[in-house]
Amino acid sequence: VQLQASGGGSVQAGGSLTLSCAASGRTFSRNVMGWFRQAPGKEREFAAAIGWGGVITYYADSVKGRFTISRDNAKNTLYLQMDSLKPEDTAVYYCAADGNNGRTYLERAYYRAGTYGYWGRGTQVTVSS
Image (cartoon, rainbow, N blue to C red):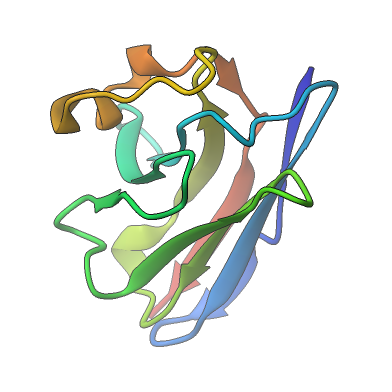
């Protein structure tokens, strides 16, 4: 089972990037998925999450209104559209998926790294001022 994140790069403040996370080895169409990020010298933090139906979404306050998480279950792929990027968005971005098919969670569980049993290797996003 593999989650492969891609789409990172370098962009100026105010720019946009779209991250993708392609899953292989199993389907995640009935699993919660999310994006976390880790800046240099900081702990990994929650960025966004989406329920397996694609309707429920949650965002960290720091990215709300600028980032949009979505998924294409037919392609077994997760996305993160990032607009109005800021230098403080600079981080390695990781995609993740929980391992419990069809499970729903209380909102606070979506924000916790421990909810997710599968992790991708990350893609670097660098935003310059």
